[in-house]
Image 1 (spheres, rainbow, N blue to C red):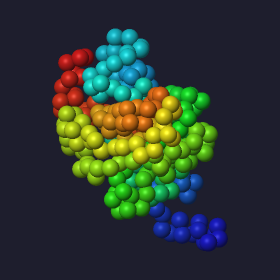
Image 2: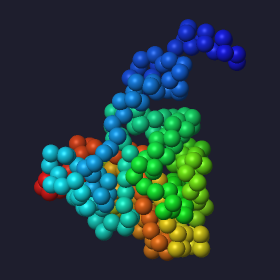
Image 3: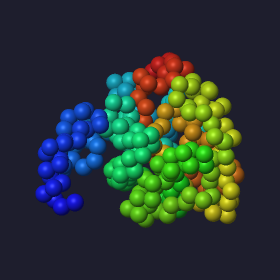
Image 4: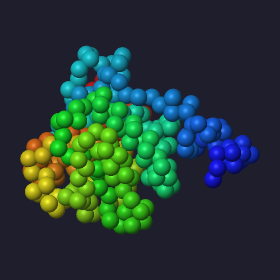
Length: 260
């Protein structure tokens, strides 16, 4: 399609931003407008230095807080970081478009954001592998891909950290975590993952990547299996987005309120 015809189609039949509903400018890219991307709220300190949960700056007792009520019980990962808030944001919309609507082009923008997050929060030289949180083979067949593997390939290319997708798998097709309490999430995901090639994981420093972190139960279970079964040296976590305090399960929110 030549540029003139493409511009005419854009003019006569403008696409709408999937987040705000306004007409997209051709320069905006796909599905989400530049204004919505510019309004993404990125996570900054103070946050928990262990799990990365953003803390209320008015409640935090000091700039560096090394554990919080949202840290998973018996945390297995070294540290976790999240890049932006999930709800009512362009980044949350982009994740849904990629994950639930087959818009694989969104992996480009999300990978770009993840690379920036790695550069800000972590040091790519500290890792031997990037491992995306795996999904069950039934979901791969239904969706056609693991969204985090698509993102991981692009992040690997930009950071130089090799991508490993063959040694760590999900062996149980669990129900969605959405709507479960913190304790139910732990039970739901327990025993869902397995290392099938220990020699690839043993003594390696792993950067585990995922799209959204709520309570951390999924990434913590992944880290546990990679460390215990795979004999990895260390597992750190980075996610694109984080669920805000108001949207946490009630039991986690209550525990955090008592701590504050």
